[in-house]
Length: 496
Ligand SMILES: *[C@@H]1O[C@H](CO)[C@@H](O)[C@H](O)[C@H]1NC(C)=O
Ligand SMILES: *[C@@H]1O[C@H](CO)[C@@H](O)[C@H](O)[C@H]1NC(C)=O
Ligand SMILES: *[C@@H]1O[C@H](CO)[C@@H](O)[C@H](O)[C@H]1NC(C)=O
Ligand SMILES: *[C@@H]1O[C@H](CO)[C@@H](O)[C@H](O)[C@H]1NC(C)=O
Ligand SMILES: *[C@@H]1O[C@H](CO)[C@@H](O)[C@H](O)[C@H]1NC(C)=O
Ligand SMILES: *[C@@H]1O[C@H](CO)[C@@H](O)[C@H](O)[C@H]1NC(C)=O
Ligand SMILES: *[C@@H]1O[C@H](CO)[C@@H](O)[C@H](O)[C@H]1NC(C)=O
Ligand SMILES: *[C@@H]1O[C@H](CO)[C@@H](O)[C@H](O)[C@H]1NC(C)=O
Image (cartoon, rainbow, N blue to C red; front, side, top):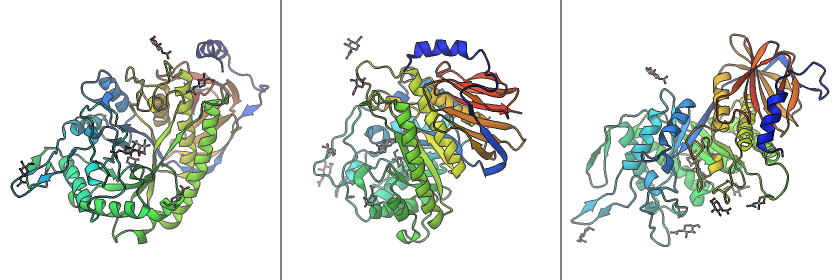
C-alpha cells in the first residue's frame, strides 16, 4: 500500500490531465438508458447511538450535532444502548413496594438530554427510535446486577438474562408504554400511581422493538414475537400513529425472518410494518491481503443474504418494509479499542464510505426502503472506526461525506438503469432523474487510480470524495468522456 502522503502527491499531479480516449486500461462503463431496472425508493440515512461524547458536557458535542444535522434524513435512527445503562434506561432500579411504601427510580435526565438534542438536530425528517435496552432487573439473573454510577463508563455486562421475571410480559409492555407516554403525551403515571410530567409532545414515527434479538439476551424467536406483540399493543394505546420496526438481526438468519413475518406467529392485528437487519464488514489483520478487498467480498456475501431475505419477505409479507439500519466496517486495529497508538488512516474512512456507497447502490436496485450508515459517534472503547466523525473533534470523516454526496445527488424517484462495468475493479450505477438529468455513481474498489471511459458524460461535472478531500466537502472536476478515479474514491458524475 502506498502511504497516504505519497498517494496524495501522485494524485495531485495525475488528475491534472483528462484521460484520452482509447486509454490502454480499457476500463469503461456501458449504460443502457432504455433499460430501467427500478425507480429509486431507497433513502440513504444513518444511525446515532447514544454515548458520552454526545452528552452536554462533552467538548465535541456541538461539532457532532452539526455533523448529524448535515446528513439528517428520513428514518434516521436513534439507539440508547446497553453499555451505558444510565443513558439508556430511565428506570434503572426496580420499583420498591410494600404495605407502607412505594417508590420508583424514573429519571430522564440523560435520556432527555440525548434524545432532545438528537430530535433538535434532525428536523423535518421521520425518526426511528429504539430504546432497545430493557432494564436488567426485569430479567432473571443469577446475581443481582450493579450498574456503574459513572455515566461515561462502558459496561458490557448489562443486558444479561434470557427469561423475563414477569412472563406475562405486563411489566415490559408497561415499561415501554410509560417511556413512550413521557415523550409523546407529556407524561405518565408510574407504578405507584404518581404522575410524572415531561411536557414533551414529540412525533415518534417509528419505534424499534429490542436490539439484535439473535444476540442480546439470546431471545428465542417465540419469545421475541411474544414481546413484540405485547409491546406494540401497549405502545399503540399511547401512540396510535407509531409504526414498528421488528427483528433487528445481527446475523441475517432467514429462519428468524420467516418466523417473524409469518402472521400465524403473532396475535391477530399485530402490525408487521418494518423489519431491520445489520451488516458490518470485519476484515482481519492476520494477512497482508488488503482490508478493503476483503470487505468488498464480505459485502457481496451480505448482498446474497439480502436477496434470500427479500425472497422470504416478498413471499409471506410483501407489505412489510425494510430498513438495513446498521451498515459499517471495522478497521482491525480500531475495531472496539484503538490498538496502541494507531491512527485510523485517511484511506480507511474513504474505502469504508465506498462500502456504504456500493451497498447502497446494489440495494437501491433491489428496492430496499432505507439504508442507514452506522454510526454517528464512535470513540476508543466504542467502535472508533465505525464512527462517521473524528472522535477527537466531532467533525465529519469521509464516511459522512460519502453519505452526504449520495443524499445530495441521488433522489427518490430517479430511474436506475442497466449499467455495466468491470465489477472486479469498480462499481458503476447510472441514474436518470425525472427532469432527464443523467448521473452515474462510481466506487473504486481498489487501492490504485483507475482510468474509466464513460462516453455518455461529456462536459459533465464529477463530485469526488477521496483521500485528498477526506472529511472536507467533495471536490468537483470537469469530465469529458472519462474519469481518473483515485484509489477507493467515490464519485457522482452529473450531466444536465
Ligand atoms: C417498606 O420499604 C421501605 C423502603 O424500602 C422500608 O423503609 C420499610 O421498612 C418497609 N416496610 C416494611 C413493612 O417492610
Ligand atoms: C423545517 O420545517 C419548518 C416548518 O415547515 C421550516 O420552518 C424549517 O425551515 C424547516 N427546517 C429545515 C432544516 O428544513
Ligand atoms: C453477564 O454476562 C457476561 C457475559 O456472559 C458475564 O461475563 C457477566 O459475568 C454476566 N454478569 C452478570 C451480572 O451476570
Ligand atoms: C446491538 O446489539 C448487538 C449485540 O449485543 C451489538 O453487537 C450491536 O452493536 C448493537 N447495536 C447497537 C447499535 O447498539
Ligand atoms: C434496536 O437497536 C438495537 C441496537 O442497535 C438493534 O440491535 C436492534 O436490532 C434494534 N431493533 C430493531 C427492531 O431494529
Ligand atoms: C437461525 O435461527 C434458528 C432459530 O433461532 C436457529 O435454530 C438456527 O440455528 C439459526 N441459524 C444460524 C445459521 O444461526
Ligand atoms: C496487525 O498487523 C500488523 C502488520 O502486519 C502487525 O504489526 C500488528 O501486530 C497486527 N496487530 C494485531 C493487533 O494483530
Ligand atoms: C503511545 O504514545 C505514548 C505517548 O507518545 C507513549 O508514551 C507510549 O509508549 C506509546 N505506546 C505504544 C504502545 O507505543
